Image: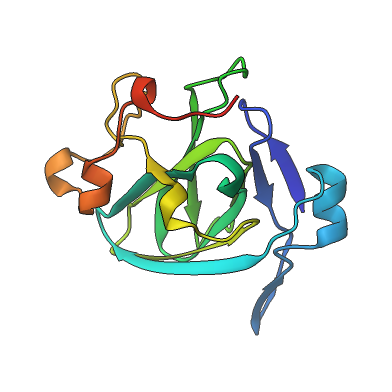
Length: 182
């Protein structure tokens, strides 16, 4: 597995070694000892999966305070544009984002540490998205930054009219209004 540090400290792209032959392929998607050596110890406690169609935008979500979550995300089917936004006020990259295309074809994963908002936009007809988290979901700690916040300035590659959003995602707050991390 290759661990590639992005321009945002703590956010990594993981590229697995894929072994293919006439039967199909095999790849290792996670090994705790290697992950801990490259990124640091993270105790994942839950795996989640979602299926979405073209244009679905989920995010930019995070959990506040002690319910913050680190995530290791990947796509099993289709392709998405995955985004992490730094919400750590003490960080030199506060308010900046990283965008990575994740797909069943490129088999990349993205590790997003605590202190970041996260979201993704489905670019294929459908996508199956899976992720590990290091903390349980707590509805009372849930928060959301607007996907179209001008302060963050994410250049989503499809028009707003094509996006499929939940009520929760249309009611996110701007970065300046958000409860961020120290």
